[in-house]
Structures are given as C-alpha cells and as structure tokens.
Amino acid sequence: MTIEPKHSIKAPKAIGPYSQAIKANGFLFISGQLPLDPASMKIIDEDASKQAKLVLSHLKAILEDSGLSLAEVVKVDLFLANMDDFKAINEVYGQFFSFEPKPARVAFEVSRLPLDVKVEISCIAAY
Image (cartoon, rainbow, N blue to C red; front, top):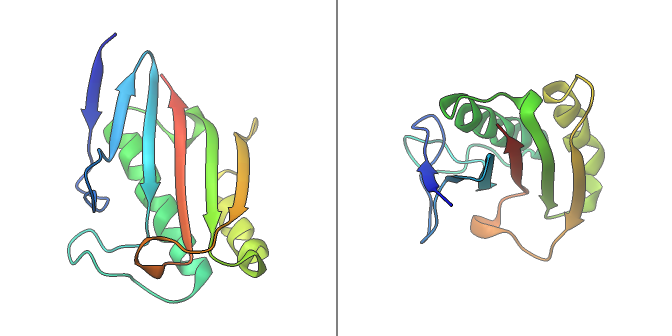
C-alpha cells in the first residue's frame, strides 16, 4: 500500500502532529478542518454559518489540489459544539453538496472542539 500526504496552501496547516490529508488505496482521507484563516491561522468569525462555509471551502480546496472535487466525497463527519447550530450549518452544507448522490454523513454534538470553534468537518473521497 502506498500512503501519500496531500496538502493545500488554501487551507490551514495542521495544528498538531497529523497530516492535512492522506491518499491511500484509492481514497483521500481529509483531517478535520477548522474555521481558520490559512495565512494568519486565526479563527475567522464567531458565527456558526460563516465558520461552516470556511471549513467547507478548506475541504474543497484540499480536494481540488488533490485532483478531486466535492462530487467524489463519499463520507462526511460533522462535529458541532452546539446542536442548536445544526440548521444553520446544514443550510451552508447543502449549498456545497447540492448534487446527487449526496455523501453519507454523521453529525455529532461534542463537548468541545479545538480552539473552541463551533464546527469541524472531515471527509473521505474516492479517486
């Protein structure tokens, strides 16, 4: 098996000892993305919808720089600091995944996210 790290400068660098994304066995595994400005590495906004839009933009950039698009995403993990933000985040999510078939997805409310952000999203895409 060949394992190849993938990276996009249009998305924030990893904030810990992990890869932004890994290509392995015909799949791209993208680590959880946070609503950070890639240049400053600072949180962009307190609004959950705006955070979700930036996070999804990061995922899209990593996919594109890896030769894929959102259409190749097969699984999404959505982590929310507060399930009360689900509807607003889901609306933004629907703008990015407006095609069929939609990827499989889970959504969790968690007790806390890194840097106290409101949303973190990871995904798996198929080549």
